[in-house]
Image 1 (cartoon, each protein chain N blue to C red):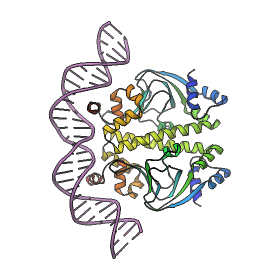
Image 2: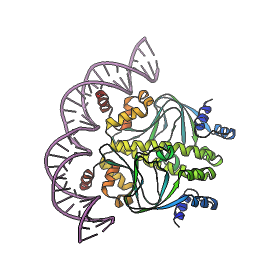
Image 3: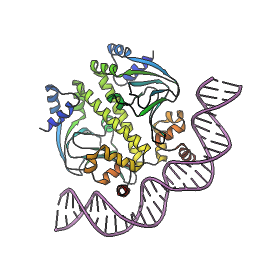
Length: 190
Length: 190
DNA sequence: ACAAGGTTAAGAAATAGGCTTAACCTAAGT
DNA sequence: ACTTAGGTTAAGCCTATTTCTTAACCTTGT
């Protein structure tokens, strides 16, 4: 059962009771996503929190030149959403697209709110999940303002070795904020 | 009463009941902090969440050349902490320093945990606070990987006009990842 | 098996941003 | 109020980093 994977994921933070598991089950929808398929497009409102069962996604913005800039990746057992749009209900400026054929579980906002209100444990769990993500992204900010592209690339490899092997270098280049050609140069050297 | 300012702050998310207010009061400590005084130094463990009643702080890392890189500012009614160190109990690599004479309220970890466990409302409130911070920092990452220093500076002014007036430009330069001299050039132009 | 997309290459060109020095100005602390 | 440290602007030089362009080759998905 795919839901078990999610329950397992939550259990890393706090194990769920049977009631909570059942409530969760009823409010989560499984979805298969093809490679290159979008689960969020610019000017849509982000309606779900998405949990990745298998596969891999990227979230990115597009600048005035049409260049994509990867903000985040999400692979197995990770969450992805444009939280800003999700909360405000405003149109997103971002895209979320499958890099690989993927399977996900999605929770719609009203369902998530239901869970928060009836089972505060979910507040706790998501507080911790977001805190962890916050720490991660804060380190990235420090990297960005204090390091060269070369350092950023090697830090990326150390921090996400699995992703580094799995992803096309174009995607990594976009994530660290350089062109694919320049990334190729960086790799050539070492 | 300084605690009222914090209660007011929480009330923006969810109003507190009397019990919660009292529990909070007993677990929060007021502290005056002089300009240049540290509330966190490298190699110390971050023991508190700090809420700024008045004044202003910066959190920064120092690179191998001894250059400071500002990760975050916090002025009135904002929280500051090295969440990573706070959670893991490991030594921080960061500094938190008062830019102005300040007054803060601090909560120690055991007290915060007590509040979380006995009043799940605090889980909820901090979940939302961290989510908001996450959105903010995620926008900053997108800026960093897709914009020039010039654009980053002007975005900073738009997003934090109060801070932009209040802070020395050296601090802003450090925040957007450039030297003070180069920031001066940017300002000259427009 | 084909087509699309990813990877490496290499050279030229741009430029963004650093470094240095210095003079001036502002504001903090005594 | 005075002193001094620290912030600000200036100007010029400099160069490392990165983009751009083109291209050929290689992988991978369908």
